[in-house]
Length: 443
Image (cartoon, rainbow, N blue to C red; front, side):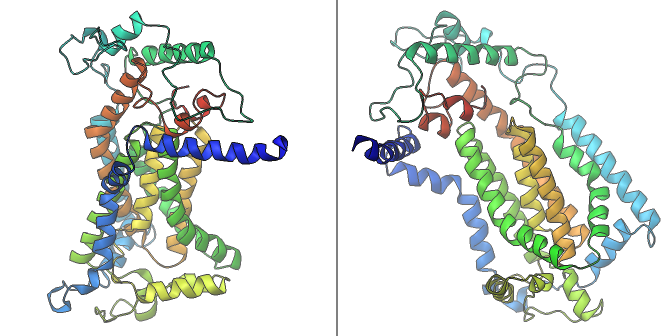
């Protein structure tokens, strides 16, 4: 009987750990409030988008039909506009070099305030476990190298069947090993960066964007059924799932605060994008395909799913088609939020993930998403590079303004054995087990 009930007991204990680890010393009221704050920019973006149709048509700006098409030809068509292509290449390369030099080059001094110089009345002031000592995290760690045996324990979380537990000695030794690696990283000439951090990705993507977009454009022909299926999956399913999975991954595997940064950056870029759609509306490629450069566009024009209607998925295609017909912003081609969202996910994964395969996977998703939007006749290459620039601008703002503070708070919490603020969701769920290090970005 005990053997039959063991899986149910395991499931109960796992769900209990997920619940209490999610609360993380908060209560059931502050948790949803914190969630609402974290995702407020995304909610604001969706609110603006959904209610855009309420804006009186007589006060909305004129729709630019052929402008994006002509600019796209000027910037990307080698045969029709070689000088425009050379100019675009020169500008993107020079801008990429400049932002890399200005914002993404490793600093020549530690990005953290030197912990060894923190005084008792500094920002890093803290109390020891018994409340009798105030010191910097580094000094505290050096004086308390052996972690308290129970600093990861929780009064409501018990053992987890089927997963090997660590002894108190193993917990202490594991923590000491990781903290030594943290101190070595902090003392490096360039300062702290997450393990395997590809901080060079934003300028590198900008520098290579012209080549990648023209490759995607070249790959958009001919039209085939397998391509229809892949593009549908990327444009519809990937567009929804990749940002969602990126948010979940940041929450489960990375420092408290990383998810909020992602949500704010993603929401801010999308708000900027949808405001641009409202103030500077441009026709997408499918409109030119149906009506030509001289076609008459109005705010009564219905949306069109374009290449998505070719996908061999009856129900899915019907739902997508109806969704595009009812879209409140039909002429929101420039910038492409499909591009911006994919790129923002890639930037965060490139910065935080210690797994190279995850970084490469997101890079290929960006290239695939760019290809899908071109293949489906939904966006110009101009729209895609503009979406990337929106993502680049917002990521750079948060990278310079807040990202290092999130890293710093996480590191300081680890050095002073503060498991509430120095752990990821996955670490809290699998605390004191052999799986804990799998969810630890510093292990």
